Amino acid sequence: MDYQSRLKKFAVDLFKIDGIKFGEYKTKVGLMTPVYCDLRVLISYPKLLDFLANLIADNLPNLKSHDSLCGVPYTALPIATVVSVKTGIPMVMRRQEKKYHGTKKLIEGHFNTGDKCLIVEDVVTSGSSILETVKDLREAGLECSETIVLLNREQGGENLLKKSGIKMHALLTLTTLISFLKEEGCVDDVTVTKVQEYIKSNQVEDKEIQSRLKLQYTDRIPFTKNPVAKRLLKIISEKQSNLCLAADVLTGTELLNLAEEVGPYICILKTHIDIIEDFNENLTKHLKDISQRHNFLLLEDRKFADIGKVVQLQYTKGVFKISSWAKLITQHAIIGPGALQAVKQNSEDLGVFLLTEISTKDNLISSSYTKAALEMAEGFSHLITGIVCQSPLFLDKPGFLQLTPGVKLNSIGDSLGQQYSSPENVILERGADIAVVGRGITEATDRAQAAEKYRNLLWEAYQKRVEM
Ligand code: 6AU
Image: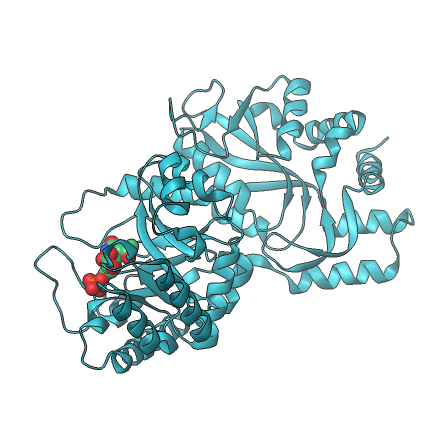
């Protein structure tokens, strides 16, 4: 059989095992697509997997010039394995989640610095998964300049990869695949047209790589995995408020009065419930009522930082029973994934803001800590609503919200190390999506008026940022 006929046979077999389906499907980023590829099913068909490995081996004349192969986790791992066994080219493997203990090795397998590594991938849309893998491989000293993929969805990935110095070889493009299927009577003309139109109008280049700094809040909803973050983004847009109030007052009555006064202007009310001197359970019940009436979320800024088991108890038990009223909490990253794991089972109804930087002068957080904390957040994207930080980090993750405290008009700081930025600066320079204002509002004579003023300034700054 010649190469074209073998490709056609592979395309038809793939269709028969439901590796490629036509209909209405939702993609990873929440967009609708008329064609869905799930090449994971290949592992159930070893003969087809073997057939595919031969196709790959015969596709690249310079295959043997590579020192290793690396499949992009997870779907391409078995594919790379079969190609490796067939060609005798060794494999390396990239861990998808970082090891949080022991040797912090990200790339498994034996290799030498400067080895040429060929990336194996199943389907390419934007190319971002390949780029993530390549980033780690390059950091480990491997050279990556080529990738072999089964299916190029022709939505812009090839170009993006080229920009990062990676040449893509694809066995099939979506266009060839669909024309093979049409020739074999697997799909009708209507489906072919739908897919062609879809490819034309769904080029990812601008959409998926666009920085979060440039997206409106509602446009970020499809990128979030945490249900509370979705709700929060809705509230922000509805109320046109990206203001979080730090309600650092000492009595229940003060807290409730403050919540009533500023409620209409905020998206989040942030508490330190353990500074309330006359706490009782009625307080959080009333607070919940007010938050529902004024449509804002409650964030208990407990900054959990103990071992997972204790965090679990601090979150659900004790006097405050935080889990019964706060939809949002803050956590330090220092503990590692255990503390996130401890509250994870609540992720339908809970969002965590993870601290990766702090606003105080001379704090001990280093840039490598911040980087590791962000990577950890990525591994818990269903739970993480956002990141508490001071600078524009994670620009390529519009699903996470940046919460930035230390905001006040006309102030240079306090005597205990707090440092402030103006509302404009915090949004335009520091990259905040939500700004935390405490004393700037709580110490004003008219707190509602102050909250409204901050709300307007912060909202205008965000709109300016998107349009800039
Ligand atoms: O505007 P302020 O200075 O009156 O209040 C700032 C609020 C306080 C702090 O506990 C909190 O912001 N905060 C936080 C967090 C997580 O919110 C982090 C940080 O780095 N700095 C900071 O001040 O309630």
